[in-house]
Length: 247
Length: 198
Image (cartoon, rainbow over all chains, first blue to last red):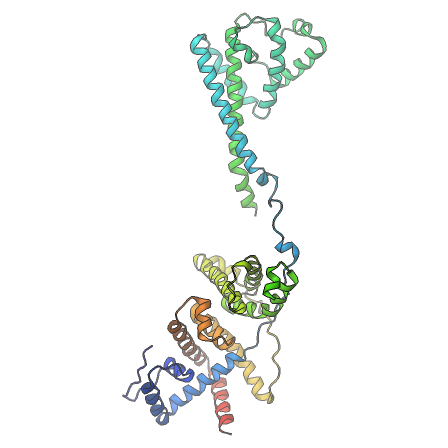
């Protein structure tokens, strides 16, 4: 700190007076100069007195009343046993895993589809467009529809001979809604194959082109999986943000 | 007490809380100027201290707690500086902290003058820079030696001294800016020097 006292009759800066008051001046000569000046200067004596008073005032400044006790409760210090947050925050890792598994499954199915159709499939392109509209309509119930197809497929296998590869997937008419699929599978469990024969409009599985039907099945499964992946990813990303915004 | 608290004795830790909460809250309040923020910082200080008991190096508990409190307060101040509009909204205008009553001095007249000046002084303190305010608070209000303030704030001894002396100079300047405050300060100063002569 600048321990300089001017000799030109100026006054001593407060900062220096404060240091003098506290005995913080390292240079004894500076303290002597200040004392000489103080003896002659009433104004600086007054300033020193005020600084001294200020120090007393600060020391005696009333402490603010504490608004409440800050004692810690056992709840505050208990290590968190459950991860805080609503269910979707807690299931965040599960959601992430589910998205990854669904994505992997989609890749596997696409690869299998590609392999099968490279070896055996041809001329099924027109069916793809019909499929995509069907897939879009079934957004919410896609997994449910896939399950239904699986049960329906088990029954159809015996009825119509299909190529080896397509036996994996259920051939389902693209015009059939998921709701009707549920109805028809219910009917099958009751009446067996007879129900299907009695009402061909509900389940036109007996179409001649089994190869095309099978490829539509592939597309449906792929679309369902893609939707599932998008849905899961969307949930994984959007839910924490929604939660954060609400807070 | 700290040893018992380390063994997981919450009651022992709360003994520390009861002993230091006034001081921690006072420093946080004067640094932040906002009772709600000071309350949050105080609670958080004790929570953090409890979580970091293992890291406590065995020095002064008071200095350790105040270091946590001042660091948190500085975080709040930094946050406010980044978002000035929000902090202005958040600053309570009407809500004044309640100051605990001071024990009346021997002379009631001097006591009244002191109390009137205390309010001016609180206002002036709030206008110092955060660093000067903290240094003056810790040294002059709470009576910490320079070394401990250097420890708490992480500044050098010379810097701490300089902040205190500059802070006091600025306080006097600020008090002189208000006519009533200047009169009161002059009166108290004359009264004190009279006491010393007597």
